[in-house]
Amino acid sequence: MMKNRNRVFGEQGKNKAILSLIVIVFFAGSCNFFDNDNNKQKEKPELLVYCGITMINPMQEVAEYVEKEKCCIIRITKGGSGNLLNAIKINKTGDLYLPGSYSYILQGKEAGIIDTSQLVGYNMAAIVVPKGNPLNISNDPIVFADNKYKTIFADPNSGSIGRMAATIFEKRGIKDEALYNAMRLSTDSKDITKAIINGEADIGINWIATTQWKENRDKLDGIIIDEKYAPVKKLVLSRLIYSKHPEIAGFFIETAAGPIGELIFSNYGFINHFEHYHSSQKQ
Image (cartoon, rainbow, N blue to C red; front, side, top):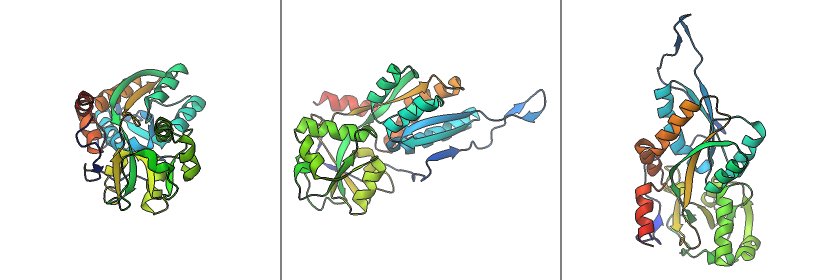
């Protein structure tokens, strides 16, 4: 187990603001891309990335780096991991997919839409509360069975944090009680964050990384849940079989999984390989 697992998180990392657009377009700086035969500027290759909402910030930074290195344009569509997977299956287009849980990658492999994959980091669930934890909430998920609290968590059918919440409640033996007490089910991690900040809910289940973003860390704390209820989740980035630019997509994966990506993801509150190894050694 990690040292001091019950501590409240909220002061780590140097983060950049999340853009509010559903599709974010990053333009490369000043790379030249010419057709030498006709001396005309070629169109830059465009890649489409499907990204779970919680990972949008680090993926934005990786995309900016790749754009400059490969003279390309990268478009990122964000949303719930399950909804994104369904969109890929229907549209049959896109280059990369990063869900919040490896289970979606397994589904993608079963559907035959995943080409190659690589681990880029880890995430863990937390009980999210207003800054300072005014209600003195513990790290025991049993609090979601107590009707004196206004609770919120995601629909397990919409994304990875919803599936994780369902897993936590089932392992704790409070699945029915937690569902009954919930004021509503959210669609994704962003909606949970908003509900806590606005005072709509007292507590929620969300990814710990969301509490360490620049726009949230002065408003939220995350209380780590024991791993016997909330196991650490692998973040796996995959290239899709529909990729029109597999070489650039492969370079994106290598960057995200390498030292540059590891530093970027760590800055946004995600666990790197070193931290996960030492955490597992303590269990």
